Length: 337
Picture 1 (cartoon, rainbow, N blue to C red):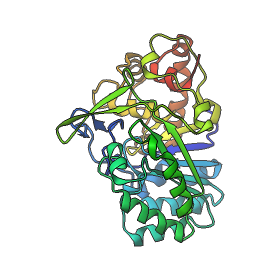
Picture 2 (picture 1 turned 90 degrees about the vertical axis):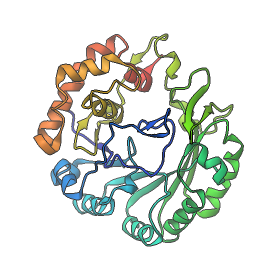
Picture 3 (picture 1 turned 45 degrees about the vertical axis):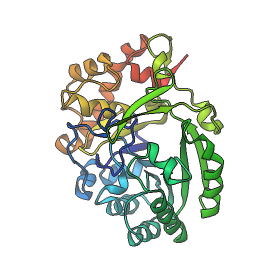
Picture 4 (picture 1 turned 90 degrees about the horizontal axis):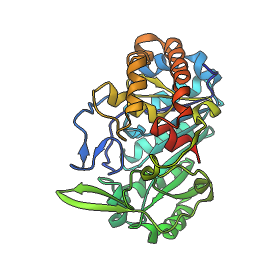
């Protein structure tokens, strides 16, 4: 296994939102899938999955939201304190919809991250409640703005990220100006690349069928340069797979303590352990995990060193599949046409 330099953590599978294209949301019901049981890493669990020697070798940490929003996690602030106690130079980013917690919590959050290499990535996809709630279901735009203003007023650093759909592309410029007005350090907008069929994605909201549609615009060159293969083209195009996890020496650790090469395999391990079919219907993914053993990645049960070693061996076993442009998730994320 390579010497890890960055980790993507999904410390909880709980979230206040019900975004239609999120892997935790069943688009047919608008609610979390039944197989998702509420789970999160406590600060004590985190110390086991990420001991001092490991954190000291890292350069970057990302608290992302595969299944949950990290700000919902009870011990997030304690985990951040522990991380910087072990490695004060670590660069950390937390991704959130920013629609939970009170003013006191946001003040503490800002004070903890002040004078650290830290950025809050705020996932906000509108400049009004009526637009925001169409994708970020169950979030409140006014509350988000209050939370971000509180965080920034206590020297917190925020980057606003905006996923562009047809329904919200008219508010991109308004949101960008608003991000400047409240003091965000950056604004980025980019289009969704998740499972559109003929340009649309169907989902249910309060018993009503709705559709997300792809936008006619894309405004951020950085995200434009990252050309993922569209979902509908996966089986028809050829691609060479150049694994980003290997290039960046990164791994993913989830709320159960499982160590995987990336968040995309983290999703598939979680569904595999619950006998649920892969989100893309990709049998090659399930085959690789089943052949290796879905119980060999857990740092809480096996210790981090063993889990890391097994993760490295698992990566090695993916090589023959990559030569044939499989599994589909590798092709979509790391494939080059």
